[in-house]
Length: 425
Image (cartoon, rainbow, N blue to C red; front, side, top):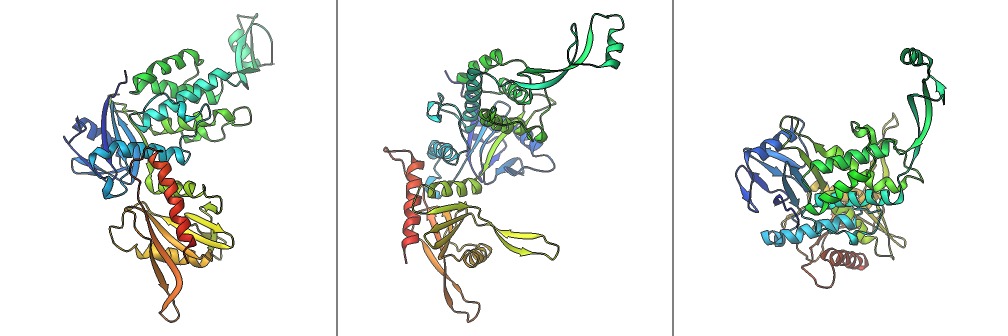
């Protein structure tokens, strides 16, 4: 039986007020104070503080506060604003993350995951466990390391000063530095620390026994302090490449975990994703499915250079090449609500039109499906409309389908929409 725990589900830009009840769970003063403490003086991008509450920003994902999980879901348009569509958006978000490669599983495919996750956090936990189980099954990689010890047989180099200090009354022993070949190295220190963290956290009951089994079978390692620097220069080579996914999840969990030092009951773990970035990546990977075009993300060009040699670049979200024709897309995760795009966005698209010699450029939004709106830029020379055009394209989320997942249907509609747009004269 799964342990559902305490779970609050909200949408991006929604507010949570003190004593508000959502999904049968109260957002009480303990949770509010934990989030306020996590916010600190420097702040976090995931939410902002308001009077007796918090307002979530354009980040989605999950924040675990003590034993309560707060899941923040996307909200693309008004058609999906109903509370009974939380389950739909939960599935869409996870499928989008899979589509862009956030959940890149090394071992058997993600279809073999056993849990139906209550949140993205559960999914990350299971992916990490599955990866470490895979590493244990195939045998942990050994590495050479330097070791100092007081031993009964002379091997390696004698450390004369320490030998005299420690063995003046034990002449049968030798203090030496030697090379050993074993599993005690940095990669395993990180994985072991992450397994211990999972043991502390509220996890799905289905995972609890597997975490216990990992602790039994994984060799005990020294406890290390983990920072960003810990993950720089890790020895990932041909032998240790299979560790990449487990280490990347470990990095995410360890660096985003903020323990409650004072009471130990309201630690915060945040795994959040910027919807602007996720939307850009999702449109990009969807368009890459179309083999008749070449799609490039973040293709930069030099734009300006100072007399001291410092360069400025321009970098559109998506650059499409079809034969000798060029198209530029800029994605925006927001709803225009019938208004024009901002002047800054339109100026940016005009520059992309020039520098990428584009046939067409477009701003891409989620929202209610409608015909692409096309506008023309004015010529700077005679103040008349030029042939340079910029389109506004809205892409709605498909409704439920029995044939395949909503996200796969959505990706197909994205390809069809842009193929039609590029082919229109």
